[in-house]
Image (cartoon, rainbow, N blue to C red; front, side, top):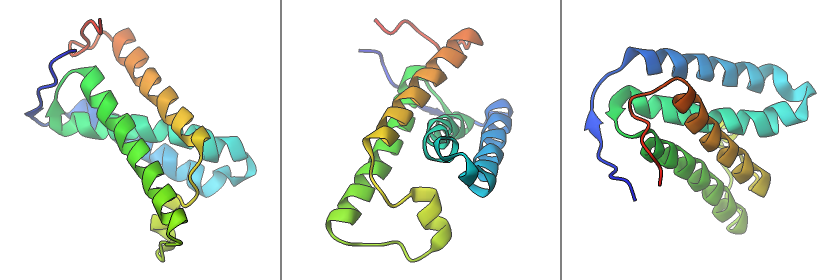
Length: 135
């Protein structure tokens, strides 16, 4: 398995990308209700990418390591939704409920996985120096 060491740094390019993804997520949340798969599936794909690029703003690490953390964050949110459903908890704040979601779904985990793979492909295609051999 590869070494996952994290060093603190600040990088402007990932901040720009994360900001664009965040803006896209806001647009999807506001205007994507007419196209259910856009908001419910594609938004989750972009969410993993958003978390990945937000992490790369502050951490210098291998792409695979940060992409796995971003995927893990998505799965943790999904697990939280499941626990909340089982215990009949609800989030009172409507904005937070939209951001975190309230209904666990395996399709969301699939979307997070697609976002994870897409991050790897984009970084590899861009020739990122943080991409290393996986095997």
